[in-house]
Length: 471
Image (tube, rainbow, N blue to C red; front, top):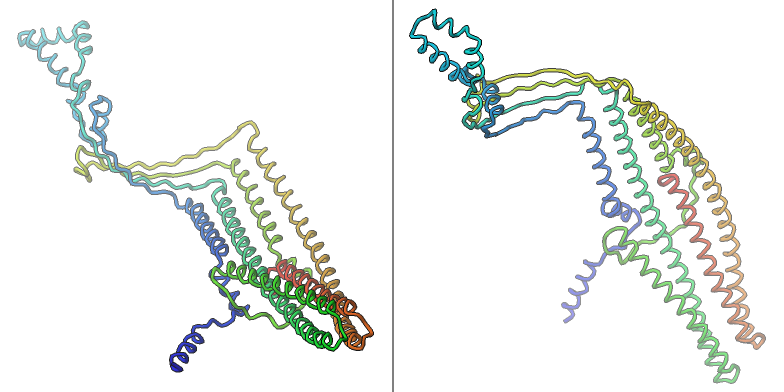
């Protein structure tokens, strides 16, 4: 039985998870967080769009295979010409020659009579008005045409290169959005770890108070038996004890919520973490460095580059567009029949130039320039806004540092006052109500200290997030 218990205990130990450290959590965050994965896919999609636009420089090669069956006179005649198989018979020469034969027969074989008859305008009109049956009512024909066509833009007024620049800037913007998601999730994860540390520290402080209350409760019970305390004193202690137990329970629930939130960020179950042992330090970074690394400002600057490229796109409408094409084809009434003999080529180029369209192009250029100026103002505004936010954060951090320092001293004082009143109660120099009031002051200082430390951490993490990373 002992061996079985030993094996079970060993199995539990071997399968027990080590508390998750912050460094390991950050690695998991970058590889498994669903929002980061989605942002990464957005960047990849944007890169494909760049290739889509820049690929236009290389033109387009198409293979076109037509299969057609028709008895339309125009189509059948055209099919035969495409196949290089047209004959004089396709022009209705059988009907024309038939008319000549009839005239010769009518002339009795006499050449002079035949020439006279052929020179007769009435006869000529009759022969020319004869409908060529072979041409007008051809048999249906199946037409196979295989065509290889290549088209390439030679000059587009820098339009393609401008659109490529825009898509590259859009890719940069998507990459910055991804960095922003990573920065935000890193901020949330780190803050959760430090929040957990503060909660555990507050719970430890409250548990010390619980031990003191339990000791005081046992002492009062003894004093009641000896007649030195009343049942009211005991009820006051037990009421305070229940109040502290409630606060510890609430903090435990908050810890559970933090575990769930950390698990959500990491996309896996988390039931134990290694909390930071030290408070987060103030980042040693200048405002200029933060502004240089700030994602919002980088995004605004990227938006300005997009606007600049948009001006180039609109200006491209003032340039001519030049393109070239080459085409190789073969046709027959059978698929690839006599392909080499029936092959044909076509090459050419086209220039198109919009010389006037009522000033629309100029208006579009001016609008693009105005949008560019607007974006320049937004970049400057973003920089001023970040500077203002940094000044606010630094002031708030300094305020919380001073508040934490005072609260730590006030907590030490509250501890000493509580101990003093506990001793005075033993000597009947103070009431139990006085002792409980002093203990309430202890608890109040613990909670105030936790809130101040939490606000300080939040402001520091917000500053780190503005700088886009650890500094």
